[in-house]
Length: 284
Image (cartoon, rainbow, N blue to C red; front, side):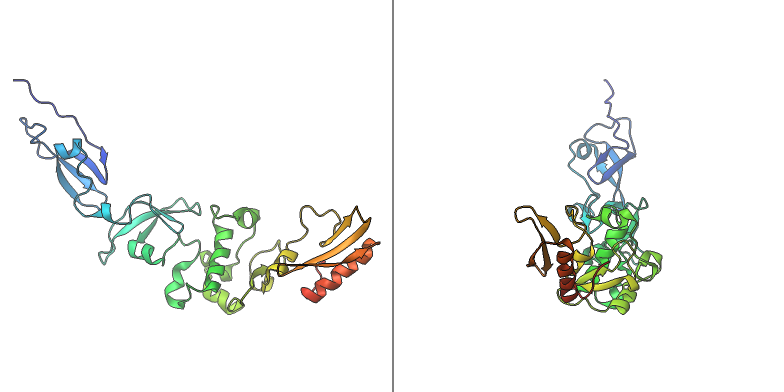
């Protein structure tokens, strides 16, 4: 009688199981009687039948991980689960995650912290003090976190205009350098309604002396000339049809025309007077 030959499934991955090898092999084993030893991503070893392996009918050790949310590939904020990790000292399930910021080192995170949002990155956005300050759901905290992401995370939309061109969050506000949200809140206070964080010098870093709360129109004014501007002065342009210089200003989604002028200097003067009136200062 010809001996029944079983295909070797060692190192094969089936669902959440990795086949380690045969379990107590016997010469007379067949597809009906053979068993395999497997390692589940939850960390437990188990024994599965040959039919379960070939039919892919069993994909876990029975831990229920398949029905849980925290599977490899799932994403929570900036973190993507890569693989199962060891349980914490208190027996809480943990997973290894990769952060969108580009940090090559994996971060070990408790699944309950992923669920609550207490951990949303490898540390590049500084959520470690959420539990103590109790402001993680406030607009001010979200502004601080957005600032950190723009400067620290290459995968963040708009990074090229901030961290990508050398803009940094200075030590006092940057958790990666020993700072904290509490320091930011102490320096800037709560974000006023209708205002957001603005750097006074658009080409300098984020720190107390260079930041203020400002309206959208002031922020737009502070960013400098529009790429399409050819006059060299914001809000001043040449109207070919009228053969005159036009002066205008934007204030809180309102477009205010300041007049038409024969001379460029007069248009600039009207614009600068409006800047003092609506913005409070002239940018040199």
